[in-house]
Length: 86
Image 1 (cartoon, rainbow, N blue to C red):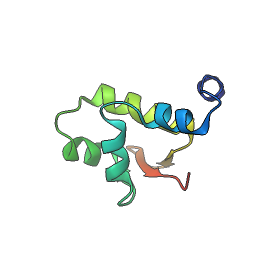
Image 2 (image 1 turned 45 degrees about the vertical axis):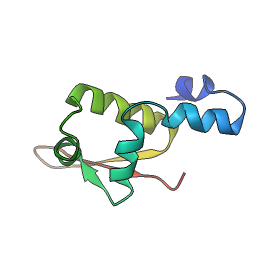
Image 3 (image 1 turned 120 degrees about the vertical axis):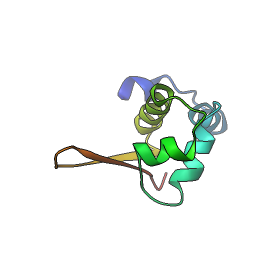
């Protein structure tokens, strides 16, 4: 997580563009701004994205601090993603 943040440019505008750049990150953020979503709900809202790419994008945004991930202790595990205040 820290390694990802260290690789960001020093200028705030350039940093912001790097964090939300890509084909899917703005779309994912759009859906997360309406409230917490499970991975399956995000997959249903964006049928054109593969699950592998969705998970990769969510992990990158989580590393940058713009997406939060909550794991609920139950079987099977319930994981929700939400946009952070950042």
